[in-house]
Length: 252
Ligand code: SF4
Image 1 (cartoon, rainbow, N blue to C red):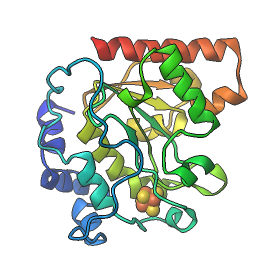
Image 2: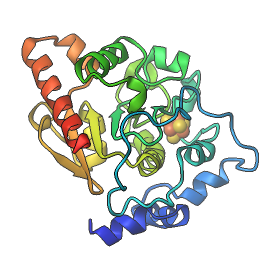
Image 3: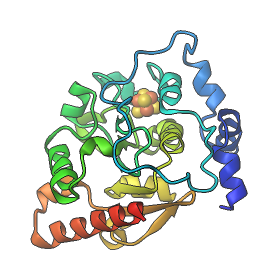
């Protein structure tokens, strides 16, 4: 994608509508039509409005328009979403957590049981491992990164989200990325990498290799839930290397 195309895609909400519509995704106007935007939904749970910690940010990467919708606007348009069947089983929407202008942004698959109950992504066992990797491994506060999932409602039994569910929710993930404008994206597990890269990936082969999403460096790594199941020295070493590479690149 050229710099101009990226700028067009992320420049403004109306431009996003047009871009996503052209790509066959749900249009922003359609999202808005299902949402009473004049009566904003309750603000998202968790520290969405946390002050940006860490070092001063560099200028945004070219094309990641400063006039893209902010997280609050994306959340408002999401509203009390019923755009896919996952809304039927959820306790609440799990939008995202962390610094709204984080340098590092993590994208997982979908909320699990604890996340669904608490409204915070990655707060169960896998989330605790992710938090340890961030805080004890990378030695940065979890609150300095931004964390979300490709779908915002818990799939039944923690199954992988279905293609139509990913498609219905995808615009909001794109909106979150455009709002945060991270220096580096880290995808956790196969579904997140496949979704953002637009192709089916073999995560155990792809992990640790730099990819790109709309001009943003993307590091695919293993999902912490997989790591819990396969807690081998090799997997731990690989994930550590991936996260360290992501942090080093984000720090420039
Ligand atoms: Fe809406 Fe996304 Fe939840 Fe589906 S998963 S109901 S699109 S918020």
